[in-house]
Length: 429
Ligand code: HAM
Image (cartoon, rainbow, N blue to C red; front, top):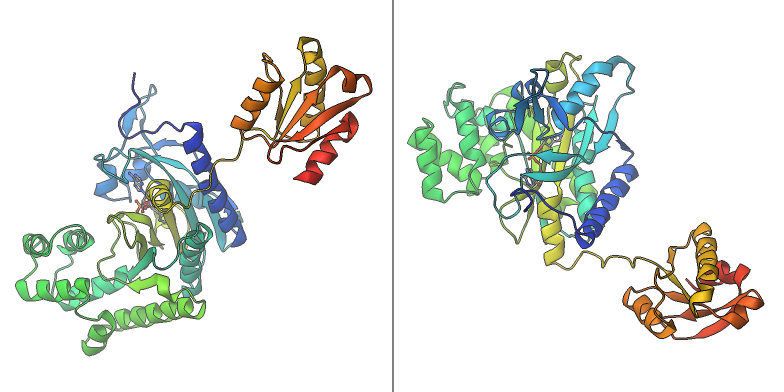
């Protein structure tokens, strides 16, 4: 029997990589003052059909449960968060800073970096409209990159604002009716060749001249800020553009500016974003986002809560792990045990068990062979398992409550009273 396509088995080596990543995620999120939450992996289907948009709804694992309810495995965490916040909005202290590491399920086409389940660090802030909150959010994602050993040569954060795209499309005479289709094409800018991109714009109903302007903004032959200054853009767009400039300034001040670029083609596939949006990419690798997020000020209200400004991101484990593996940035898994207790002869097996229990009680990862094979073989097995110490329990020493402590790295060994074993091992660590 094989596992389902797009679903992973985590053998211990892979599990060690996953644990390393999750520990780093948790450390950084907590460093910024975020608290962890979780929700159910199965939700009512309607939670996703209401606001997430067609792309993700087309990838749902959904079915009717035995009670006749339409349910779905969660493909993302944001609707669950919005539902939970809406349910208790008045009593939750704001701004609320939450993080979570859910496993998510999407029935996608299988490709490198894209699976049918993945884990995602979600970091969200609810209750602040300030641009400083937007900057803090992206700072968390960038700090995760640094924590994992990734620098601006490795990763770029591409940022944009949904309201700028909508302002630009308005100015180019593109009707709001076709705007969602145009967003979807702009989102594909980096994924398709230039000719296909202009064909897609034409298919969406964009005239040639407007299409050329969009193409120029996307490939950056036209500078977005200069373009907006030279055009009769409306007041809202002008304010949004100046906010975006201030946002970029915050990263320059924090010496994170090298990570961040504006990019008109970042619109995000999900339907609920309303403001600044961003995606993180591997500068050298395939065009798969490591992370994506932005502002979604209307989502909480759409689940029956008050109108609360909100923003967040999701960072997947799949692309990130591939990147870290390619660059040799994943640490070797820690040894299984630190100490192996080896009896000299079968009569001392129960004595070895007793010593093992004492060391375990002292908090040291310790084991003793189930079937001792002789000191030489047992020592070899302990070295193969990368244990740091062996404790050899021989008849003479045992009679005077002692054992031989052997440092498996240096080969040094000496007799130690049993009650001092744990502290000696600790001191040597
Ligand atoms: P998303 O862009 O759909 O956003 O996913 C975020 C990240 O999850 C992606 O950049 C990618 O690294 C990873 N990811 C998504 N789908 C897959 C997949 N099939 N296989 C492997 N990795 C994948 C969201 O999900 C939003 N809910 C994020 C968010 C949180 N927005 C606000 N708060």
